[in-house]
Image 1 (cartoon, helix red, strand yellow):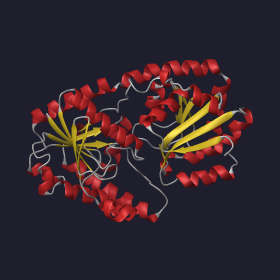
Image 2 (image 1 turned 180 degrees about the horizontal axis):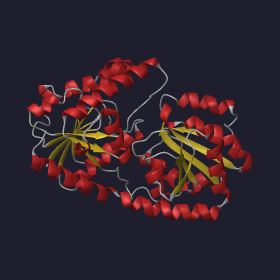
Image 3 (image 1 turned 120 degrees about the vertical axis):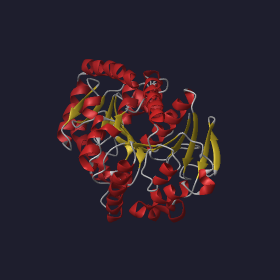
Image 4 (image 1 turned 90 degrees about the vertical axis):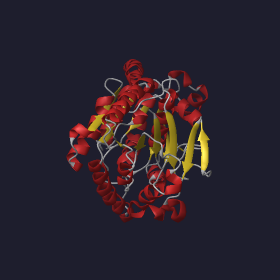
Length: 389
């Protein structure tokens, strides 16, 4: 089948900071191609400069959106996604993918009725409901428009993929979407890449025997300050602990200021965005992966860490608290003292930590992309047979 994935982020020729979304669309494209489907990507100039490009045999078309012209101001009122959607259906761009059997998109586009007219089914992938983005009025306006457009798109089309039961419940609760239109398909993990053998003796020597790792975009819902506030308590009980942070985003610099005020900089390293090769090493070498986030649709980083043999500590809210099973531990949401307690216990009880590591590897195997993509394949065949748009 011929499938076009429309996404503002595609990690070629380089990655940006939308870690989870970029990895998701990349793997979705590659694994669908592996099954014999003909894949095309329509994206923005966010991660590349060539209008026409190719990634591992997958043709790419880049089109303009308002952010490419106006910078961050082009994202006001969700304008960047709406202009991306409008440019997507322009005749000269539509020619690139007009023979598609499906359009899969991980964002709301604003002009999807066009595809109904062309009798191309739209499959919308829903990650999670955003209650807040950041504190700026600029972002608050973004959220309101996002909610309006999401409700509009999901109600118009018949095919929605939610990445977890929690995401499905959000669609039903906040947008009143018919549950029969929603199929839950979890995000996969690349077991051939994320594995314990990526362990780095160099990283271990550099940061010591008690390494905590965080890697994610720093937006408000990730709650990175909760982890930072826990560090002095952890340091008191585990003197040689070291926190390694990778990522970026709107709250990155603010988190640096918090770390400075808490006097963490002697045992906290802000790496910024790191390449894939280093990311694999940090996952496999760290003792614990910490995700203090208050809201995730799935928590892709959880399984990247667990597949690497690193237990996870996350907030005790679904879906993360359910997905980790016995491959990690949870703490009370936004409670830095409870987070510190969980970390201290595991770093002091290495046998328990080892068991969690073994469990984590086993649990991650259930989310192998090679298996997850078969669910997508079956779903696409059902959608095509029904012929609904």
